[in-house]
Amino acid sequence: MMADRFRLAVLCVGCLGLLGLASCKKQGGSKDEKAESQSPDKEKQKKKQQEDDSSKSGASNDESPHSSGIPGTMNQLNHDEDIPEVDFEITAPSNGTTLSSGEKVEVEFKLDGYRIGKTIGQHVHFILDNKPYSAHYDADNPEVFENLEPGTHTLRAFPSRHYHLSLKQGKAFDTVVFHVEEKSEDFNFDPEKPYITYSRPKGTYSKEAAESMLLDFYVSNVELGSDAKVVYSIDGDKKGTLTEWKPVLLEDLSPGEHEINLKLVDSDGNVIENGGYNDTTRTIQIKE
Image 1 (cartoon, helix red, strand yellow):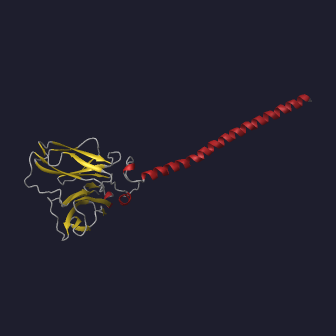
Image 2 (image 1 turned 135 degrees about the vertical axis):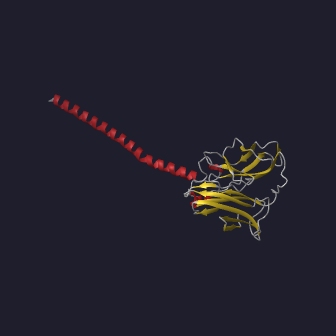
Image 3 (image 1 turned 90 degrees about the horizontal axis):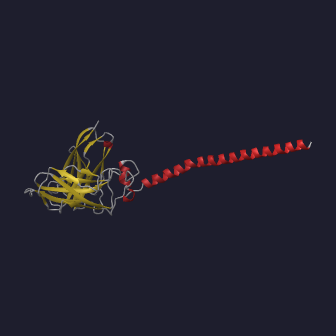
């Protein structure tokens, strides 16, 4: 009888032990499941924080691929803030210098308050003799122009966003006049007088890109208003007159070749003369 009672007691203790072990395993599984259920929420919070960070504009977040996290050209124009603390200067060749050869001209520059690079897309536009710009992404190496003809040359430059919008505040623009071997007798551009610098558009675009295309330019030594205006035309047809220095979106250009013209005019609509730089035409191509 006593033996039966002993065996029953041992059996009860064993059952209680098994039940306790099972309970522990269940509780451990609950913690894992709870952690897994919280993981998506943490991922969502992390993603939201990244989106919030990428939507901030200016130089402070220029380590992100783009200066604006909002897609679409109009959104970018409305969202991106200019950077008044930027300081840009062409340091070589210096203004008025005469180079012995134009075979290889290295243009050195200083840029503070704004990063450039292929990864982030931000860069500097260099415009030689009113030709289409070249985009420079390397802050540690000079821009190089080769085989320049003897005579006088102008070089204009300014930092740009990844989508080629020029920075317009701070000391963001510089012009240098230099000579190769000798001065040109017929050179009549004066960098102290009013002039504009055509930037965009240029080159070849896809049909999708032509749905909303940036027209951008730089204004120097004049404030736009009643006495000075910018007139832009497409294929010979006047499309608009600007009395404020703001970029324009050209919309729905058809496939094919187009001529974009930009003029700086006075109150009577006449081109303000300055070496031919205030009446510039670029030919662009829209692919099918």
